[in-house]
Length: 448
Image 1 (cartoon, rainbow, N blue to C red):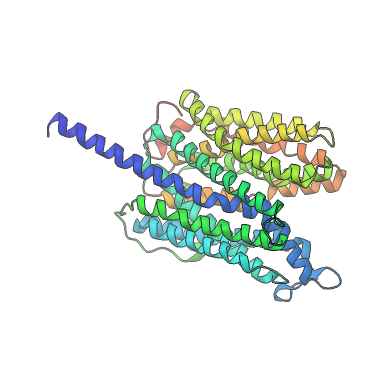
Image 2 (image 1 turned 90 degrees about the vertical axis):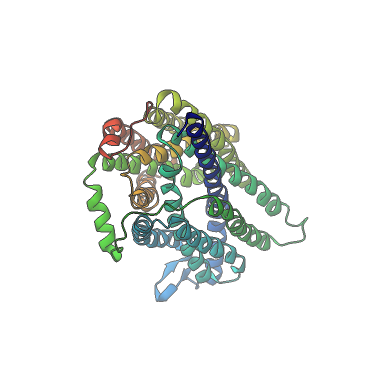
């Protein structure tokens, strides 16, 4: 084979890889709207209002005969969806690795979640059980689909490209979330001008997220390729597969050490995201419009932050950049503790700081973990990563709630979350990532 032929083949392979990467970005573009518009902004308050409409005189609903406070129904539904996802993800991940057929499984999970989200249009009156069921299906399906989506990263990007590719994916997601949220907020805030009720506006916003999710999922399904696995072992049933995955991961203790660090600092990140609006409304006395504007600011700046931190990782390595972001998270929480009440400018500054480090922290954690996955185990190991992301994110809210219960201060509650970033920093700093990558059987990038 001549030199020109080799160059042509290499150029064709690079073009094919870039095409597949661009298709991969579009799944973040497709599904992030669910996380932003549905989970973060609209569904929690709306489903709670529906549950309250169905409650008895004491404020309880009775799903399957179990008394549940109407105000807790949304939180319990989210928790149940996490349990479902934790059971299903190892099964789907192992099946994807052993058959090599990730794309059909990704499509099935994505369209199941998109259909459930679109079905939220029919959530009104006292149909709280319908809302809970759709939330459980959509949230669990999103977790499974994200696990499969993340597991493509080691296959579509060589080691030196992964930080940039992962960062672009997150940036695409935040861009879509911001774009659709702007449209949704225009409809919601000016619903009278459009001739619809506030309730109908919310239902349209919820359903539009599902339609967006389903429509743009077509792009990755057309461009991503399946890689056939050399092994065709049957997938173990139920908890046996989860146990088998954990047992296999014990052969790579440094990968587990990274997962532990990620579990802790990511729990802090997720808690700040979920509790910032509570802190803003209850402690700082800010209006709902201010809080919604802050959410939108986070989305826009997280896109820019993901791209900027991807560039920093090329110079300083992913591990150092993540460690720097954890320092920034700690400083941001400290500044938030001293914010004066009734000062929206300070809260917007806090939101800006969160946005700048949020996207990069998540993008670089994903790309760094992709180096620690043994070849052929991508989906199975990313199921454990996704469980760390979604299945263990209750410790932070628990600490936040206990601190508030003991002190009666949301300021004390928000500053208590610093411990997650400090402990996560220490644990990540102790992981020898170069040795961990070598032990997993992967090439070590020049910068990591």
